[in-house]
Image 1 (cartoon, helix red, strand yellow):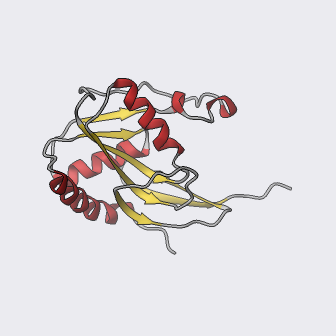
Image 2 (cartoon, one colour):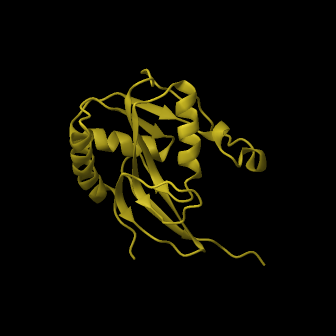
Length: 170
């Protein structure tokens, strides 16, 4: 399957999100982008929706379950949630859903700030490589990769995917 163009996926995701929120009776959600790609996708969604819902950012580095194995990434930044979490309807946005561990870490961090009324998960790509039972409510495209492939979102402008084959070490 060919690598999609993120810019082509955003309008359909914006439509899906609008319909999802209407079905749930949610009129004023807060968006939370997972740094870095999720923030870019969240901003692109807000632009496509022509909406000014509040946007927060999460850096889940300290909440990852592989933190002790991999150490601290040198570009860790503080999370910024300029709104209350307690009782709010949140739209959690990430670029690529692979194992589900980043989303688990994001949920753990969000619940440290309070108990949201609901969390809607939006992902640009679903790689169907989950290790945890986490599925997006809104997804741009499902793109299964081979075991030797990886994909990364670059941006913020323009958004693009970089698909790479892992080199085998001999």
